[in-house]
Image 1 (cartoon, rainbow, N blue to C red):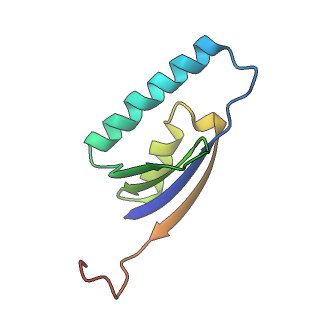
Image 2 (image 1 turned 120 degrees about the horizontal axis):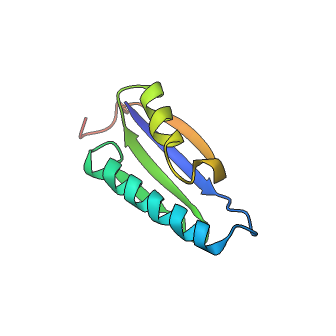
Image 3 (image 1 turned 180 degrees about the horizontal axis):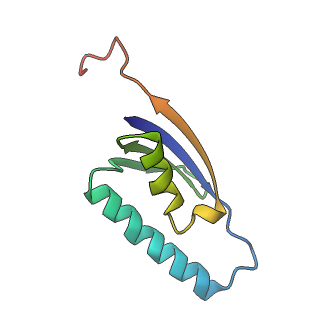
Length: 93
């Protein structure tokens, strides 16, 4: 199942800089593990925002929720999920 996921990060302004650096490093490591596993095949930065648009390829809604809630930045994110389906005009389908 494919999902488009928009993630907007909203870190508190008073978050300790060391804590911020640690969380961001953990986030990068976790995200790259999911990419290597094929669960997170696409990620794009949104220009001018602390946000991204990603595509996840997972087995179920529950798996997507588990992966997203495992993100170290999850408590600081606004997340919007859009399920995707094959388009009948797609020549690659």
